[in-house]
Image 1 (spheres, rainbow over the protein chains, first blue to last red):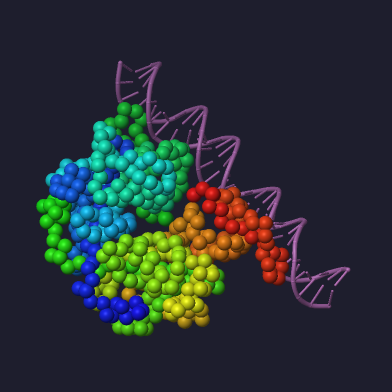
Image 2 (image 1 turned 135 degrees about the vertical axis):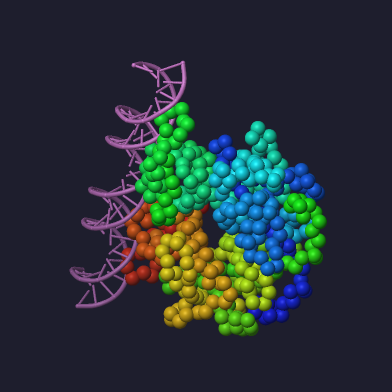
Length: 243
Length: 243
DNA sequence: CTTAGTTATGCTCAACCTGAGTAGAAATCG
DNA sequence: CGATTTCTACTCAGGTTGAGCATAACTAAG
């Protein structure tokens, strides 16, 4: 039987279908480190564990639309650039039933991250501990500001790990570094964000040179205020720089 | 209502679920260009159009397992390294019903590609025409060996386009270039594969130097046979070179 | 056997990029 | 005003890349 014949004779109700959900990895910078927004599960299974905001995909709803709806309703965030990350389909990833989940990634500027935490959605910021270098991949764990571990629900540790890996991979040739910063920023802030994503320090002068040469940043003419020492120049992201 | 409450009260049968499928992008090199294996649809809808091999995901079947089953049953290929590409979830991507499809990518060495074509699965090799440079992305089209266009079914042109984009992005820092070659190959063959994926020529000496310096290739001592001119040395992929 | 033709391989050289260090500029604090 | 700290620009060595040239290795034609 060919695929065509199979599809033509397929009865939508004849076979049991997996449930389809989306889960959101919402990342920001917290105390100079990568952090994710998590919700605490209050019900069984896995009550008390920490989970990514998620929800089921409607029958007439795009995956992207489902992710935007979850962003709005579960995380209380109005707008963010969501990007599909990976689809997780292990059979036993949820103990109740078969749920296939499409993971999405969004990067929040510091203000949006703080606003989401202060909102009514009972979100917590979990600092990510990434024990591997570069794009090797591997497990990650989540801790509170005090360093206390946060137990993650389901396969959400794997989802977070993949998000960090993807982020590191895109750091050098896309604008992900700017997505975590406010509109105006100093080169030092930009470098700190890159260092937080990489999990490793960067050469200062080489970094500054590269950013200026690539044409990604434009000087605003203004300077930092309120610093104890020489204020740095403020830049903004210049989208006209080619990618 | 929090996510936990929602999930706890969720009745698996209460809401209509999208159907979940996998589609396979099977790529190889054909006459020095990237080519994909396609099936011709014999039934409505979109009868006569060309489609990627695909199939539905079973209720107790991993996404990866479904992709492997389709590879075996629909494409007649025993083994290949499948990698998840992206999940396509437009509401109207299939006119019959809502189908969300997880696309997978596999790279076939020249022999496996030819063997699949010769097998009983009625597959056709479609040369991919990629009108954009680098990782810009955009539409692709498929043509026969003679240059005649092949009309693609559903959103499969988008899936192929994303596969090419992904492949180009991974070319420089992973082993994808070797996956399309036989076990023993010359540096010229390796360079041709890279050029076919990039869609642009490469500097010869710089390419050779880079490949040798990275430790990805190991000389076999043997030489090409049957060439009209000086035979090139045969190399094999050396997995011990770090990534 | 000799020579022309063609590709493989190794070498050099200039241009560019990166990591590292140094020196002066600009601000606050005591 | 001087000490302190960070920002910014500059230089320099080392490594990588693109480009070209010389030689090696092989076949086919004469």
